[in-house]
Amino acid sequence: MNYLDREASVLYFKLSQIYFHGERLSWDHYKDRMLALKNMCESTDPIYERANRILLVEEWTNEDFWPPEHDDNECTSSVSTTDDPAYKVDIQPGISRDEKGNFHFLSKRKGLNNWVFHQYDVDFHPSIPHGHYKGKNQPKLDSYLGWVYQGSKQIRRLSRDLIIDLWNDDEFRMFARVAIEWYMDEFPAYNWRVEYPLMLPKYKK
Image (cartoon, rainbow, N blue to C red; front, top):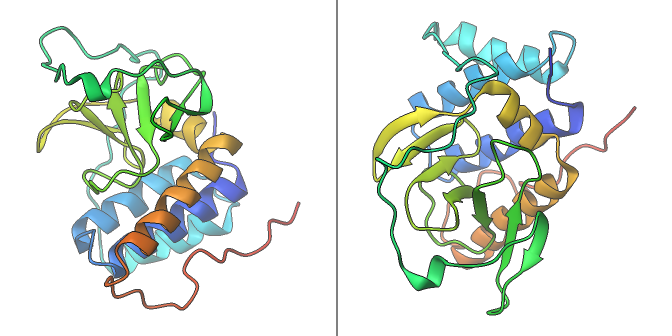
Protein backbone atom coordinates (compact mmCIF):
# COMPACT_ATOMS: atom_id res chain seq x y z
CA MET A 1 0.00 0.00 0.00
CA ASN A 2 1.22 3.50 -0.81
CA TYR A 3 1.76 6.09 1.92
CA LEU A 4 2.83 9.70 2.15
CA ASP A 5 6.55 10.12 2.63
CA ARG A 6 7.60 11.91 5.81
CA GLU A 7 8.27 15.29 4.22
CA ALA A 8 4.90 15.25 2.44
CA SER A 9 2.99 14.35 5.62
CA VAL A 10 4.68 17.16 7.57
CA LEU A 11 3.85 19.70 4.85
CA TYR A 12 0.23 18.52 4.66
CA PHE A 13 -0.11 18.78 8.46
CA LYS A 14 1.54 22.21 8.70
CA LEU A 15 -0.45 23.73 5.84
CA SER A 16 -3.69 22.44 7.37
CA GLN A 17 -2.76 24.15 10.64
CA ILE A 18 -2.07 27.40 8.78
CA TYR A 19 -5.46 27.35 7.05
CA PHE A 20 -7.27 26.58 10.29
CA HIS A 21 -5.52 29.28 12.30
CA GLY A 22 -6.07 31.68 9.42
CA GLU A 23 -9.80 30.98 9.74
CA ARG A 24 -9.96 29.45 6.27
CA LEU A 25 -10.95 26.00 7.58
CA SER A 26 -13.77 25.15 9.95
CA TRP A 27 -12.93 22.90 12.90
CA ASP A 28 -14.90 20.05 11.32
CA HIS A 29 -13.07 20.46 8.01
CA TYR A 30 -9.76 20.49 9.88
CA LYS A 31 -10.70 17.23 11.60
CA ASP A 32 -11.67 15.76 8.22
CA ARG A 33 -8.18 16.62 6.99
CA MET A 34 -6.63 14.95 10.02
CA LEU A 35 -8.69 11.82 9.34
CA ALA A 36 -7.62 11.78 5.69
CA LEU A 37 -4.00 12.42 6.70
CA LYS A 38 -4.05 9.60 9.22
CA ASN A 39 -5.36 7.23 6.55
CA MET A 40 -2.54 8.22 4.18
CA CYS A 41 0.31 7.83 6.70
CA GLU A 42 2.14 4.76 7.91
CA SER A 43 1.49 4.02 11.58
CA THR A 44 5.22 4.60 12.25
CA ASP A 45 5.04 8.16 10.89
CA PRO A 46 5.03 10.72 13.78
CA ILE A 47 2.38 12.72 11.89
CA TYR A 48 0.10 9.68 12.05
CA GLU A 49 0.25 9.86 15.84
CA ARG A 50 -0.31 13.64 15.91
CA ALA A 51 -3.35 13.40 13.65
CA ASN A 52 -4.69 10.41 15.55
CA ARG A 53 -4.30 12.25 18.89
CA ILE A 54 -6.42 15.14 17.61
CA LEU A 55 -9.10 12.72 16.42
CA LEU A 56 -9.13 10.81 19.73
CA VAL A 57 -9.41 13.97 21.83
CA GLU A 58 -12.27 15.22 19.69
CA GLU A 59 -13.86 11.75 19.44
CA TRP A 60 -14.02 12.26 15.69
CA THR A 61 -15.12 8.88 14.36
CA ASN A 62 -16.55 9.82 10.96
CA GLU A 63 -15.82 7.22 8.30
CA ASP A 64 -13.42 8.42 5.62
CA PHE A 65 -14.46 6.61 2.45
CA TRP A 66 -11.97 6.62 -0.41
CA PRO A 67 -12.88 5.21 -3.84
CA PRO A 68 -11.08 2.00 -4.86
CA GLU A 69 -7.64 2.45 -6.39
CA HIS A 70 -8.87 1.59 -9.89
CA ASP A 71 -11.71 4.15 -9.69
CA ASP A 72 -9.75 7.00 -11.24
CA ASN A 73 -12.18 7.88 -14.01
CA GLU A 74 -12.16 11.46 -15.16
CA CYS A 75 -15.12 13.78 -14.76
CA THR A 76 -17.94 12.76 -17.04
CA SER A 77 -19.46 14.87 -19.75
CA SER A 78 -22.44 15.56 -17.50
CA VAL A 79 -20.23 17.89 -15.49
CA SER A 80 -20.42 21.38 -16.88
CA THR A 81 -17.29 23.45 -17.36
CA THR A 82 -16.68 27.08 -18.05
CA ASP A 83 -15.40 27.93 -21.52
CA ASP A 84 -13.71 31.12 -20.36
CA PRO A 85 -10.74 31.61 -22.73
CA ALA A 86 -8.67 32.79 -19.74
CA TYR A 87 -8.61 29.21 -18.51
CA LYS A 88 -7.65 27.66 -21.83
CA VAL A 89 -3.92 27.17 -21.32
CA ASP A 90 -1.57 24.64 -22.84
CA ILE A 91 0.15 23.23 -19.75
CA GLN A 92 2.95 20.69 -19.78
CA PRO A 93 3.46 18.21 -16.91
CA GLY A 94 5.39 19.66 -13.98
CA ILE A 95 5.69 23.33 -13.03
CA SER A 96 5.38 25.67 -15.99
CA ARG A 97 4.59 29.27 -16.85
CA ASP A 98 1.91 30.34 -19.31
CA GLU A 99 2.11 33.21 -21.79
CA LYS A 100 0.80 35.62 -19.14
CA GLY A 101 3.62 34.70 -16.76
CA ASN A 102 1.43 32.71 -14.36
CA PHE A 103 2.82 29.50 -12.86
CA HIS A 104 0.88 26.23 -13.03
CA PHE A 105 1.39 22.65 -11.94
CA LEU A 106 0.22 19.56 -13.81
CA SER A 107 0.94 16.04 -12.59
CA LYS A 108 2.29 13.35 -14.90
CA ARG A 109 0.18 10.76 -13.07
CA LYS A 110 -2.82 9.32 -14.90
CA GLY A 111 -5.94 10.37 -13.02
CA LEU A 112 -4.33 13.67 -12.03
CA ASN A 113 -3.10 14.83 -15.41
CA ASN A 114 -6.24 16.80 -16.24
CA TRP A 115 -6.08 18.88 -13.05
CA VAL A 116 -4.26 22.19 -13.47
CA PHE A 117 -3.15 23.99 -10.28
CA HIS A 118 -2.73 27.78 -10.39
CA GLN A 119 -0.06 29.11 -8.06
CA TYR A 120 -1.39 32.64 -7.58
CA ASP A 121 -5.11 31.97 -7.17
CA VAL A 122 -7.01 34.39 -4.92
CA ASP A 123 -9.81 31.83 -4.52
CA PHE A 124 -9.24 29.70 -1.42
CA HIS A 125 -12.09 27.24 -2.10
CA PRO A 126 -11.86 24.32 -1.76
CA SER A 127 -8.18 24.42 -0.77
CA ILE A 128 -4.91 26.27 -1.33
CA PRO A 129 -3.74 25.19 -3.82
CA HIS A 130 -6.63 23.54 -5.66
CA GLY A 131 -6.94 22.00 -9.10
CA HIS A 132 -9.03 23.17 -12.05
CA TYR A 133 -10.29 20.44 -14.38
CA LYS A 134 -8.52 20.91 -17.72
CA GLY A 135 -7.61 24.42 -16.55
CA LYS A 136 -11.22 25.60 -16.54
CA ASN A 137 -13.11 27.38 -13.80
CA GLN A 138 -15.20 24.35 -12.79
CA PRO A 139 -15.03 21.72 -11.45
CA LYS A 140 -12.31 22.13 -8.79
CA LEU A 141 -10.26 19.65 -6.79
CA ASP A 142 -9.47 19.80 -3.06
CA SER A 143 -5.81 18.77 -3.05
CA TYR A 144 -5.97 17.57 0.58
CA LEU A 145 -9.15 15.51 0.71
CA GLY A 146 -9.52 14.54 -2.94
CA TRP A 147 -13.07 15.86 -3.24
CA VAL A 148 -14.16 17.30 -6.58
CA TYR A 149 -16.52 20.28 -6.38
CA GLN A 150 -18.95 21.74 -8.87
CA GLY A 151 -19.53 25.10 -7.24
CA SER A 152 -20.08 24.27 -3.56
CA LYS A 153 -21.35 20.73 -4.23
CA GLN A 154 -19.17 17.65 -3.81
CA ILE A 155 -19.68 15.52 -6.93
CA ARG A 156 -17.04 12.80 -6.60
CA ARG A 157 -13.75 11.94 -4.93
CA LEU A 158 -10.38 10.92 -6.29
CA SER A 159 -8.74 7.81 -4.88
CA ARG A 160 -6.47 7.83 -1.84
CA ASP A 161 -3.49 6.72 -3.97
CA LEU A 162 -3.87 9.70 -6.32
CA ILE A 163 -3.77 12.20 -3.44
CA ILE A 164 -0.76 10.39 -1.95
CA ASP A 165 1.02 10.56 -5.31
CA LEU A 166 0.24 14.26 -5.55
CA TRP A 167 1.77 15.07 -2.15
CA ASN A 168 4.72 12.74 -2.70
CA ASP A 169 5.65 14.74 -5.80
CA ASP A 170 8.60 17.04 -4.97
CA GLU A 171 7.54 19.57 -7.59
CA PHE A 172 4.02 19.78 -6.18
CA ARG A 173 5.32 20.21 -2.63
CA MET A 174 7.50 23.12 -3.74
CA PHE A 175 4.58 24.54 -5.73
CA ALA A 176 2.21 24.26 -2.74
CA ARG A 177 4.62 26.04 -0.40
CA VAL A 178 5.04 28.95 -2.80
CA ALA A 179 1.26 29.15 -3.26
CA ILE A 180 0.59 29.49 0.46
CA GLU A 181 3.52 31.91 0.94
CA TRP A 182 2.07 34.10 -1.81
CA TYR A 183 -1.39 33.91 -0.23
CA MET A 184 0.04 34.98 3.13
CA ASP A 185 1.81 37.95 1.54
CA GLU A 186 -1.20 38.94 -0.51
CA PHE A 187 -3.61 38.76 2.43
CA PRO A 188 -1.50 39.83 5.45
CA ALA A 189 -4.57 40.48 7.62
CA TYR A 190 -4.87 36.77 8.39
CA ASN A 191 -4.42 36.05 12.09
CA TRP A 192 -1.49 33.59 11.90
CA ARG A 193 -0.68 32.22 15.37
CA VAL A 194 2.99 31.54 14.67
CA GLU A 195 5.61 33.98 13.43
CA TYR A 196 6.97 31.70 10.70
CA PRO A 197 4.16 29.26 9.81
CA LEU A 198 6.03 27.74 6.88
CA MET A 199 9.29 27.07 8.70
CA LEU A 200 9.17 23.28 8.79
CA PRO A 201 11.49 20.91 10.65
CA LYS A 202 14.41 19.65 8.60
CA TYR A 203 13.66 16.32 6.99
CA LYS A 204 15.82 13.56 8.50
CA LYS A 205 16.30 10.24 6.78
